[in-house]
Length: 246
Image (cartoon, rainbow, N blue to C red):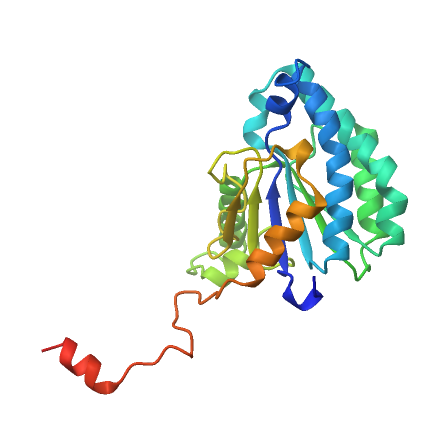
């Protein structure tokens, strides 16, 4: 795939881990373990295919309602991923960042996050953004409240909201993919995805492959993205409009 055809910002809701495991008569946490292997493959693929930013939905604000053991497993898997993938991220010139509320993570894990963010701050390759403890509604309300507190009495604009979002440097989402068969955004990048192309696949995250990502990217490249406007190729005569108004 030509790099020029790649979307600038791809976001993925990595869904279906638990159901994948249960369908194989394993506990749900086994699906999360297998899912981390898929993260490594897809991050590398996104970098290879010329994607500018990849944002992965790892843990939402709503996920705090899941069983304690499952949450603890997700915490451990994040730490393992940070340790295992550190060298690959650095060698591939990837800029790493975590967005969301990470205060409930163990101190060691928070230290690993901050260290990798600092070390890759000036990297020019793929921007890898992990959404952990993230909720889009909270992000938007925090953005508005932060601006209002700094600019009392003034009206806030759309641009000022965007400039205060956690993802302000990543730009809008061009392509949002959800694995696992469900067709919803689940409080993920709601503002940023206003004009995103949405792709829903039945494939559960542990089975999502580099090839399927490539197929979706190629499908995306054929879309005529008009953002509410008409393509310049589409023309109509003045008489047509006049006749339609009669």
